[in-house]
Length: 490
Image (cartoon, rainbow, N blue to C red):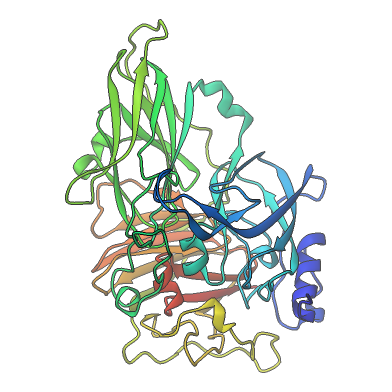
């Protein structure tokens, strides 16, 4: 199977060099590296394929067409910070795909966004990704083509980037909670992932709730009076949760993999943290006495939905008071907020929207780029500043929302004027969430995805890194129906 000449050029660049000559690809920006070329390298083989999995439970019909990497549902990789992953990817799916490294500050030519950074990898095709891991934290990777369908059928994997200094903190247990629903009928067959009704409103929800792929919430043993590190991700395409624990001895210690001063859940409104698709939390839970339990819930539903139960097991420990453990400080580049340039963006419906951003110059290689129809939805329902990503019959790549300068700091005001929540994700950057008109008691924190509520304005700030970077809602139907734009940083 062949890949287009442009894809070959991009793949070779991503796999090999820290940057490419601008003359080779016109006005496109440099693809800057985030690690020195002397960084230790791990070579990894990654393959996407379909398989059969009993998603409804062990005694129910199996579901065909489940998608996974390396034949492992909920695959988890670990690597130390400062490592470079050289990834040889093979697409064994029957349809095109890409791999996006969510939250990782990769060179943009390895960002996995068709057609901005590469063409889709066809069935049977291969692509090489250069994935530096400069920042410790909790990340994941997933396709960025037919994302609603492929992620909806399970195609994502977790990536833990470890800081050796964290070993000194002495957690007794690490437990992952991956929230992911399935759209299945009673016989385990897939239902449509994209519906017009869902894509134009809150999204099309799954019919079967699950944690870590199981319809039975996990029960996990931990030492009584011990310390548990929960690593929580909403890997669902649509669902928004309100994460909370049935204990006052719990504190958030990282958001989207980025450390923050421990924030006790008891200090939050309603003692919950709202999370949407792609958002992650690290939470320190101090266990109670022997035989007691800590239940972890999604409180957003009418009846709290049990995600996991932590069971305290007697290991001979004495009772101690709760002292939240602080992770080493985040290492991502921080913006100069005092000198940041202000930009305003409105998240809106596409009704009456007309592109107002200036077009790319005619000689830019992306000026006539077309979006693969397989990668997006059939209709457009959403826009950012009246610009919508291509969908349906209009598959032109829209002009960039703005052109930013490499190394400068920017302050974005994001106002959601719709009736639905939108978790907004910026590729290639870690940003500081500065303020919210609704969540006024939460202190600033670092993230790569931020929830915007209806009629809410959120301010974020970041230091711009060279590349072409998309900015989109991570409710995947919203993204596929237009709620995505991009910045050029040069």
